[in-house]
Amino acid sequence: QQQVKQSPQSLIVQKGGISIINCAYENTAFDYFPWYQQFPGKGPALLIAIRPDVSEKKEGRFTISFNKSAKQFSLHIMDSQPGDSATYFCAASLPLGTINTGTASKLTFGTGTRLQVTL
Amino acid sequence: GAVVSQHPSRVICKSGTSVKIECRSLDFQATTMFWYRQFPKQSLMLMATSNEGSKATYEQGVEKDKFLINHASLTLSTLTVTSAHPEDSSFYICSAGTSPLTDTQYFGPGTRLTVL
Image (cartoon, rainbow over all chains, first blue to last red; front, side, top):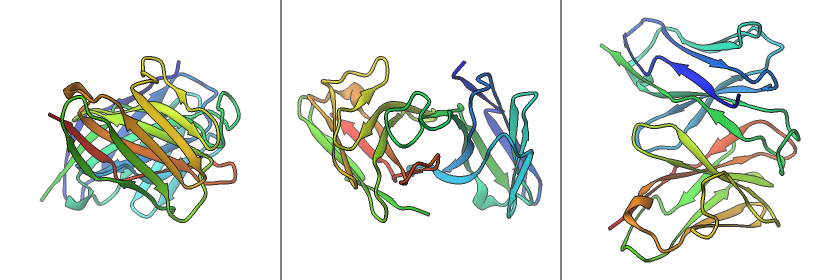
């Protein structure tokens, strides 16, 4: 129930195209869904995040679509650029204070999607 | 966004030695920090949750005596890999949640550990 399934494993998109990465979860208690971008040899960087009470959130070229009934959420990268080539991870966490011992929630990560944007 | 640093960025050590990795929150206080391990082309695996002033909480399967975690201040957590072996070679990453209570976690740049 703690798993977050991510697809596809890898994705090749032409410059200017739309990149779409999907994630699905089982635990309906999750209430925070961030996306992270990771370049080789670097730590993940927070890209955008959403909560279940919102169906869509847009920040620049990045949009999260959230379907609460289907327990799915996706990342859309519009006008994809070669500089977007990286590994993307979706994640989910439980509400603060649920089973945590501190002041931040544990993240459950998806398996990652390697995105390559070609010229 | 908040900045988390790690030191060193890369370390090579001989089998049997211990290695300490530092994780610092540079512009905020982090009551809770997390330590992850990442193998090549794989996802992040949570090792432990580190809380300032208390013992760390380890995930199932992670050896407490092998991976010592200390969170002595609101801006510093350390991970010590004791008696390192080649199988401990990995990319270790920390993250921190900004205070007060928040869902957002910021990650450090990672530490590449190679055990010869």
